Structure formats: structure tokens, C-alpha cells
Image (cartoon, rainbow, N blue to C red; front, top):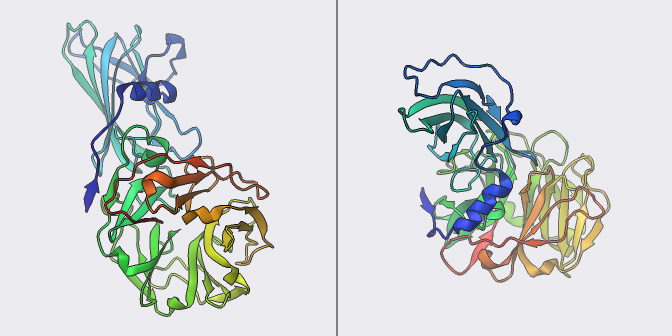
Length: 421
């Protein structure tokens, strides 16, 4: 796989301001703020070398919540300059910082769960390494090391095993995966960073990101080729190579005008598919969790769905029994269908007009870690860098989305025509 990156344009002042707001680096709090904890048995052979007398590093860290900040603390018996590296074992990606301790030797790092390039921290094993230099510079530098885990869980649109949703863009036949936190939360730092998942994706006329349909823990893709055959691309959870060899589901899917997935519609914990045929019939495909046969035989659940030109399975945005669906009619009005928990839906509720301004409407997942799924939409200009709009979920079925905010980011992909999935 190849990586896509544009020249860095980070402004130093913006980075300083970001760290000041988020507490993303090492801090030197007042001595009274020091947490208590066991003092490790570390013996210094040099009396000038600062000795580690106390530390507090969580064994497992989770950044999936709204206040996803984890505090790491070390105390030495003398003031020191501390350089710290947090390194993801499998990928080698790092978060680094440098700071002086307080006069009583305390150093605290408040980590918001991103690497130095502002991409989301991956799940898995990490090492921490401290390089400690006496503030007086009279003694040698020494190192301290340890380990911890990050487990931020899985997300339906997460293809990098970070617990944070990613963005999928098709351009010139290739599919690109962009880190969602970098692209949406830290887009002011520099251009988004993406992985090229390979060529040949223009063979498909439908690509859906329903979550883990194959039972392999990571999010998968479902795609329909132009002959009507449906395929699953199993997710690997590895950002550099996000998809394994595709698996054939079956033929005959050309009968459907719309195919969508991403909601658990029957409450069994597995994502399902919904498809509307060209005569307006709605069909429910129950997820099985088996990649060799990921969907049970279809069941008809509705009529008259030919009035819609876009169906999007959103996850549970209304706070009801199960996953929900939004549908756009041919006048540009968006409607919400609350899931009833049996694969069917309650009567529709109007969301609002003007949604015909968008080519794509994507159930991106929880972009701001508030526990509610969001929508992202791509305008009809066909260029994702200039027209992305983010609609944050509210959890209120009567007004399921907050007013839109423009996702002012640059996604560096080739070509003039792009599609968002």
C-alpha cells in the first residue's frame, strides 16, 4: 500500500494554541496536584542522576469517550528535563513531548489519544520511554521504560483499529482511507493523511461501510460490481493495508436501486443490510457474522420506497429500540425512519429540506466521541475538499441532527471527480 501526504503547512502558533487548549503535551502542575502512588524501586548509581520515586501510568487507556484524556505522571527526587516517547509497538508510530519538571520533580502528560501527526492512536500495545536529564546538567541522562495498552474499542466506520471513524474516498479508481480525527478534528494542522487501498474500485457501482459483517472484529466493506455480484472486503484493522482479499457473497443484486448498511436493525449486535428494489419494495438482510455467508435470506419489509433516491442506515440516532434509517425523496427532503428492533421501521418523520445539495450522504459514525452517530455529506461539486458538511447527531428523534458545520479540510486525492463512502 502507498501513503498519501501533502507538504506540511502547520503554523507554529496554531500548534502552540492547540496544546494550550487541549493539554496534549507535558505539563508542570503545582506540587499540590501530585497524585499518590507506589514508589518503584529504582536505584541511582550516580548521586547527580534524578531518581524515579513515583509513577502513575494506566495499564489500559481508552480515548473513545467525550473527555478522552489520559494522565500519565512521573515524579523524580530532583528537578529534571524529561523527554517522553509513547510508541505503538506494531506500527512504530509515536507521540513525543519534552518539558521541565516542577521544582519538586513532578512531570505530568495529558494525552488526548493522537500521534505526533494528529492521527488517532491505534489500539494495541505501547511502550513509554523517558529520557531524563538533571536540570543542573551536572549529571548524565538516563532512561526509564514501561508498557501499556490502548483499547478504544471498535467503530462501524473505523478501518485503522483506533476506535475512531475514518473517511473513505474513491478517486481515479483507487480507494483512499483518511484518518477521521486528523481530517475532522485537527484539519487546521495540515492536510489529511491517507492510505491508498489499491486500484480497481471503479469496478463497483455501490460501496457500503456497514461495520463488521464478517465476524472478524474489524469494519468491513460491502461492494456491488457492475454485473450485480456482491462482495465483502474484510477489514484487517491495519491502517497501512486496511482490507483483505475480497469474498464473494452472491449474484443478482442488480435488482436493487439502493443498498445500505450500518445499522443493527434487529438488536442482535450485528449490522444488517437494507435494499430497495427498482419497483419500490424494501428488503431486510439480517447479518449473520459469518464472512462466507454474511447475510440471511432476504425478507420483505415495505412497499413504496421508490420515491426515494438515497437510503442511509445511520445507526441508532433517535434513541429508540434499534438502528435507524434516513431517506431522501426526489424533492430533496430528508426523512427519518426509527427502527423498531425487528427489521422494520416506525412511520417516517420529516427531518428537513435541501438535502438534494449533496451527492453523497454517509453515516460516518461518532466523529466527536459523544456517543451519538453523525452524518457527513459531500456537495455536488464532486470535490470532497471544498464541500464536506458535518451533521452531528443529537440523540433526539424530533431533531436528530444539529445545524451543519463545514468540514474545512483538504483530502489530497488525484483527479477531478471523487466519491465519499
